[in-house]
Image (cartoon, rainbow, N blue to C red; front, top):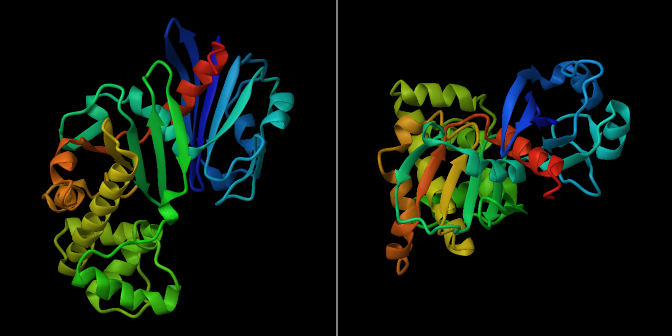
Length: 317
């Protein structure tokens, strides 16, 4: 049986066609497309699927709120409808899931080369795992249960309130509050958030042009304001991940994904992120037992979608 998986984002879409072999699957074809080059998800799939291919099950991971297997994408002018896709491409079964739910399902498929461990901890077998990813926005999801029967729990935790922990962070909130009205985690822990931190560190005006990618490159090159912004970003991310670990009791580990953290890993391994994660008195001993990893595998969401498509094809979901 063949399965189709897709991880669709605003800038790029990754697609995979695979053959089920026992409990595993073998990649037949994989390709990454620039999403804006296509007028619709149907056009995207036309560009990937060969005519006449029989697909037993498909899973599409998308950035947007899924309701009744239909979604209007957040960063693309596309409507993705499972029933319409099944009819259009002759797919036997189609499932649409939130992109971070798919990433959560991809966690069991990670190997040692796909993660960087910041804290080994003492993971509990089949313990709940938490995922937090900073990129265009801040995504959050949980994965419960054993690998054989996982259950992803979607979340909008990225929009939870930011909690300052010291005078530096209080001053940051006081600076931003008049302009934003409310400071959420995503206000700071995403690409635009890193740009806000950099402008403040560099003494720039709020409307000064800034690029998260350029800031990261400057920080890696040693530019002081960029390094200060990245260091603060890491502490804020560590503290937020620690709060998520406490709220969910993620004894299976916390995983940091997204497009920002892996690229800044050389600067985030110095201990500031980990210290902020653990600095939760009187729960520090507990926090030091919770594993903390950075996901470096860019295919996490695609692998999760493939896992779901395989389960769907085998009648397990």
